[in-house]
Length: 76
Image (cartoon, rainbow, N blue to C red; front, side):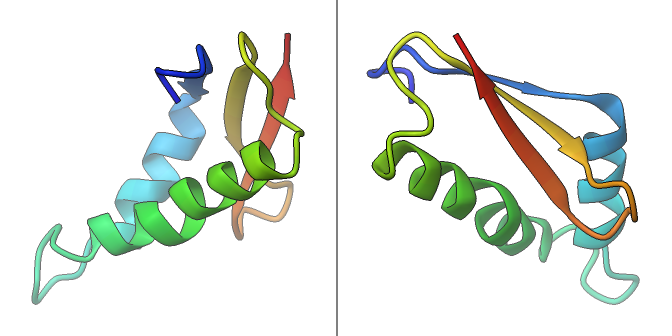
């Protein structure tokens, strides 16, 4: 993303959601990497490949209205 000049802004609610979903009492924060890949990195990559995020855009990440997932919006 840096090479394409795309910046990322993750709001506080999304950070808390990622921490809650990515934490496991047995494994600690180890599952967090997989949660970030599945819910943030992969959707961002798809949006870039589909042309929804372009050079110089800012990707904003928030929690959906139901609190069940992340929403990624882009703007110039």
